[in-house]
Length: 263
Image 1 (cartoon, rainbow, N blue to C red):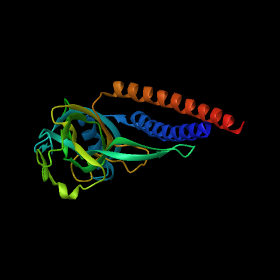
Image 2 (cartoon, rainbow, N blue to C red):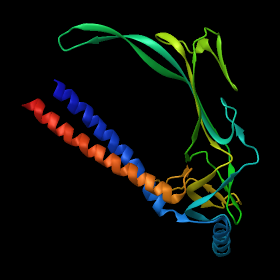
Image 3 (cartoon, one colour):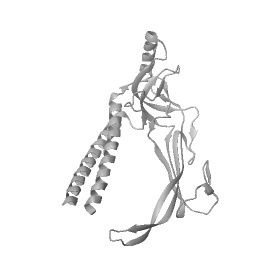
Image 4 (cartoon, one colour):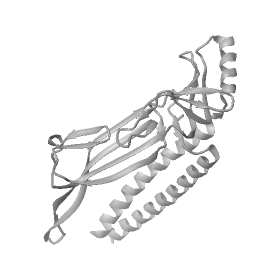
């Protein structure tokens, strides 16, 4: 019985690792496929394309490093930090009595600590990416955005009628759930205004302004990274390597456990 359970767990792990590895493979391919560009080069290419077939027809998959500039930054919901993107999460942590029954039918009760998300909010705002030659607009709404954690705070349950943290507020009547509430955890991550970032995406002048945004090609990912290209390449390659090792190990354990279960 134990061998069957082990085989099932490692098989699921292998499948999960495969799909995570595939995601990073696509990211690596996107990073290698994107052409390095500066704001000046993009401007020159846009002018050339406009001269050949008219303005608004630039479509080029590029990667550009620069500093974030924003005229009207966001203020994050919880920590109240200036940023161009934030994701805030509030979760309820509680204890629950759980019934467990073993293979012999023996029943035991244990107390487990669990959590449930009661609020999650994401917001982004357009910004400019400035290099030594000029700047290009970035529309980050559909991008995969690297962030910096700025808050992870647990507040014990005070039996108050509502939760208030920064600009966040919620009536507790809407958060009724199972178990005994222990408290609430507040988490937030942001892309701050004072950072240089790598943007990988499609350059376009369709709106009349040079803009980096999502590509129409499914395998050309649109993402914003906090690391320069060289460091990001190394990180992604190492991640793929470890995911490959983990997937192979999971498959081997699955096969061995399945054989043991049949004997």
